[in-house]
Image (cartoon, rainbow, N blue to C red):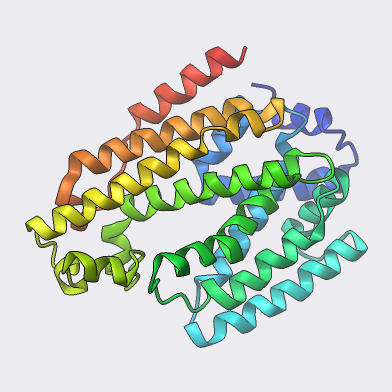
Length: 300
């Protein structure tokens, strides 16, 4: 793995002030999401890494603002962030290192700013006041309005000029799978925080109440509900596998690793059964290390 300095140079980032803001963005990612950062550093083509890290730092920044502070203030905070972001994209710099790095990455890679504005609008309209899904249609709208633009403000930077329609559709399938797996793995923690990411009409069909989920009830109806959710996640994951081929060559090892990690997570959820209502389901340390090591070997 090349050093961070060499990685910046490989990406054509040679001016000291620009290197500094990219380094600040990388440090933010390391503090918040070490696993994705490590996957990028180990597996992605070095010339892509700084731009993708800047995109990940920006995505995380928006998510953090959308989920922090009193609910009634979040939309306003996001509108202010949106104004600062669009100014940075317009003039190329900001007093905030993450926004400066991201503006530079967007300009260098030619990512259409429509993805950025869609993500920011979705964060303010959808995520800031998230209250769950009434139906599967509501969940699909969440993907279109927030989750997919959120992924593409980061992953879209792999494509010079931004993703085409086929690539965007592939990443939309990927984010569907990722969300379904995450919702299952994080079910216990979400419930503790007052978030329910299962459509309410799906609960009704199985005659399961939110209170039963919050209490960790292990009943036949609850098990049937969880089995259906796992089946939906597995189907979505199968549909998302073509994202590897749709990725830029320098990011394909990362795509393969991400798919394999989701498979590990889904198997762990299945083993947990109704225990997923009482504790979040991780896949430990060994499985990710094995996945990364295998992906590293095959990428050489």
